Image (cartoon, rainbow over all chains, first blue to last red; front, side):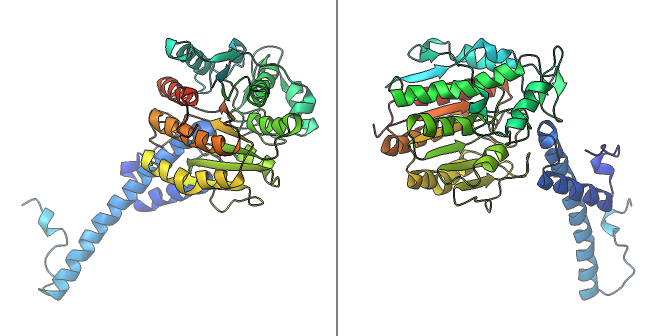
Length: 87
Length: 312
């Protein structure tokens, strides 16, 4: 089994998390994981999957705002994360 | 009706490294639970040892010889990432097989209607030529084939509700239409086999469950997949690979069964055994690594075996 990366799941980029998730799915499907460690690998995969889903949802929210702006007020000057601006 | 318990302190003598989940305390727990007053009515027997010829009904002779040769004189020896041998392991694993034979003789000889064998090491991951997943010998397959050879059983159904798929049992009976193998298990999980499309020669029924599934999904899989297949097979004996690691407390599984789910499944299989097999059920302990979950589940399972089934 490959060594675990030291980066916490919540700090991974989408690409990092997806890559590790894919490798875990392959390991589990190929039966390459020890019995004792199998459930740990599955749970790591679940955490990665949740993180990926969260990142995707955040990205979807941003895309949504762009589309609405384009269809509604085509100003193009409003910051993408204007709602979150600290002022 | 009588329920037989086959148990022995010998099963404490197969040693694994400190911290290993498949540990002697599992048997201490089961033996303690089954010594409570609720289980005073159990008939009790001890296992017997077996010849290599018995082991070779499921394993290659070279494999049996290799396991014997791999046993260390002291300390423990590692066979794979999960599987270990200690000085008495060959003898202990042989008696785990022999426990099933004692149970088969009892249910065909009329001394008992059904039986539970409190054994370790477990068996359902062991293949014809390979030890894996804590398992050395294919306890369930050897019991089934012994029932055929010694007791005249034509068809034997092996039902496996351990949270892990019994890849060893499946591989050994893959081409054997006289043995049905029907399993519920979590997927994905070790060992990676057990997809619904793996059907052997029509004698294998896999009903994989999703991580997080509980009693509702387990009972649905039993009602729709497992029980109809076992009933249609008209077995002369039902062997249960009784792993209790699908219990919600278990550290190695991600299913959420409770002890009453195991009791329910036991009773449903007893109903089928009553219809076709004179009630004969032989249950063999497989996994189950949370001691409280294991103890509670064994208690519920054995209490169900001891109860008169609804159709009796």
